[in-house]
Image 1: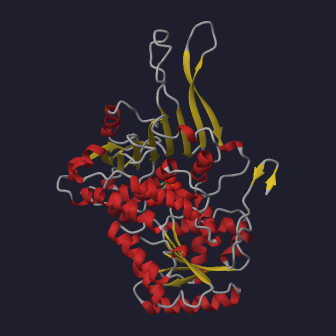
Image 2: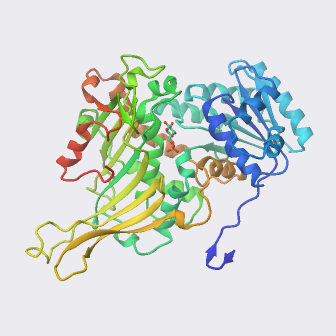
Image 3: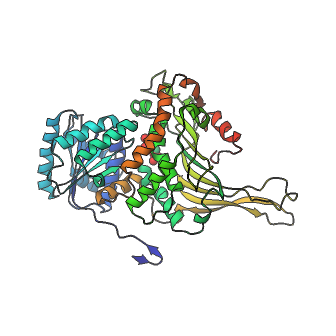
Amino acid sequence: MVKQGIQCRIDPVCEPFGLIIYGASGDLTKKKLLPALFNLYKHNLLSEKFFIIGAARSSFNDSDYRNFIGSYIAEENRDIIKHFLKRLYYKSTDYNDINSFKSLKRKIVSLERSYRTGKRRIFYLAVPPLLCETIVSSIGEAGLTLSTDWSKIVVEKPFGWDLNSACSLNRTLHRFFHEEDIFRIDHYLGKETVQDILLFRFANSIFEPIWNRNHIDHVQITVSESIGVGERAGYYDRAGIIRDMFQNHIIQLLSLIAMEPPPTFTPSRIREEKVKVFRSLRPIEKKHIPEHTVFGQYVSGEIDGKIVPAYRDEKGVSKSSNTPTFAMMKIYIDNWRWQGIPFYLRSGKRLKKRVTEVSVHFKTVPHSIFKGVVSNEIKPNVLVFRLQPDESINLTFQTKIPGTSMCFRDVTMNFSYRDYSEPIPEAYERVLLDCLRGDQMIFVGQEGVEIAWEFFTPIIDFLEKGKKVVFHIHNYKAGTWGPWESDEFIKKDGRQWWVK
Ligand code: BG6
């Protein structure tokens, strides 16, 4: 379809469906999933025939559950909320009891008749990773996937807890679902600006020829958050920053920046290229982990003028916790394109501000003709993908300041997504819609997830099983950019953090 220079893919249709969400009373369901589904409904992006069942251990009846969820949907038009909530049901479910799943099946079958959805079922696991395998087995053993038109399953991140548990979860999933019906979510891949990295790289011809070790000096990826662990301490204190952000969001961003051009814009070809990047990650041997990483945990500090507590004083966190809330690491990709080029990855909670940015730092000019004209070195070009907030792409370069003197200055050429009148959709709207449409483009494949764990599991083991790990976790004040050791680290390499 071509409209005045705008080119759009024709989107697949969304078929009728019944969606069953496990973990229905949790944070993710109430704050993200159901509000995103409501927005899709409001914009007529869902099929007219659908129903949703929330399943969890808490006891609600349908009406209490609708009221509970209704309070999380921000919409002035109460009528439209009412219509949406009418399709929402609740079934109290004991995840360990097969009879509970059989009784859920009876509810599904009856709603399929009322809503004439056919037997098209989506099971969404919005539960902590340690519960996933039990739920998948119960879904399968209770016969919920039998004799359906199709049944799909959506699994939230972190997918598994380490390499072994991820492989085991994959095996269990494959007992009841085909790989093409498994949707492993990483909501970062649903972010508009993250998807645009591929378009930027492969729908423009000017950067690709210089996108390699000959022209790029290094790459930085920063995913910084000013929030703390909030109400998720129970999960976070066991997970830590590596499982929560690195094994998924950050490594996925890295793969989009580093991958080779796929032959076609199709899910399997893109996954193949990502897997090649993961396979090329240079493993960090246990004895070298301290030289390649910095870990931190926040102590009390000030953010936006407010004093916030130390991580160990957060509700639900152990007073002696050694869970890192900050990490930075330097990694290498051993292939022809990236040999010798460091990728600096950094993420943390309670940092100075919320910002997610990828900056590609080009090499300095090979020979400066301006030596002797200006005293300072000429600054290299930097291409920045500001993924959130203030979404933009910008490029810095040198210019002469107008005037009779020879003065240099770096300036920034900026494209802001605000220049589009279209609003940026919530990542969860995109991932849910793609899953309903059966489009796997932005979901993670089995191989990708397992190789990513292979890379990170030794680092997690170092943190959790290492004897002197406490020496490697540095305190940092909330509201700063993490431990000073992280700044020192990059300084020793003759570089500095771009986001500061
Ligand atoms: C989640 C992590 O996957 O991503 C959270 O579990 C984190 O700890 C969140 O806060 C960040 O997402 P976003 O979209 O706000 O950048």
